[in-house]
Length: 289
Ligand SMILES: [Zn+2]
Ligand SMILES: [Zn+2]
Image (cartoon, rainbow, N blue to C red):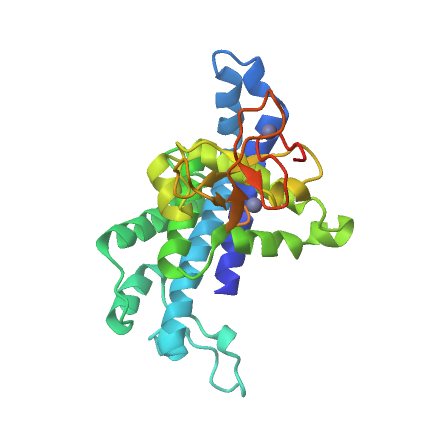
């Protein structure tokens, strides 16, 4: 699964990175009719196209990994004429031609107990066809939307690698990437909080619930862990779970953890909060209690 997750992570970084740059340039503040924003996304199409090919690669590698878990030799092309020359000795598995992506679903459902359902097969085919358009014609007929790509990535992981907690593995990926080698990983929480904020903003309530267990309508608080670890501004990444007045559990989408909170009035007269971290910080105004 690691090669697949790597492709999906790269695609995710590209998509969220594009969104971050638009936000960082504060285009929305003066682009009243949205013309510049539209042009930005238009000119990002080739970059989004690259991200889509990585998403397709992620889907393909995930399926191959499930098939290989049953028997890796099933992935080899049936056609002997596609095989490497027979006079070579000790031919590496990687030198053999594997079956076409279009046949992967059929093979998967023929040999794996976990059958892929029609909606997922339709998604896989749509991603594969769009990728082929980009590879063979330079671009797809239909513009690629950011939300669509984010949902493709999350759907692939949710269906083919459900044990992966996306934001947790995102933290591992960022902590181990080349930027953390060059600069240290001090910036990682800031990046992840920003990604979470974009995702909360872009995805609909049902997708946020399905992929992250996050309630879009709930009032948001600072996470006692993530808000302490950021270098820049704090982000409101957590909500009470269940979202009830007596609830003492706070869920954060970034660290993907539940934190104990104390329900008592903040010492700041002007602050209306009654959600205080276990170590005594108000999770609305960040005042020590
Ligand atoms: Zn957190
Ligand atoms: Zn407060």
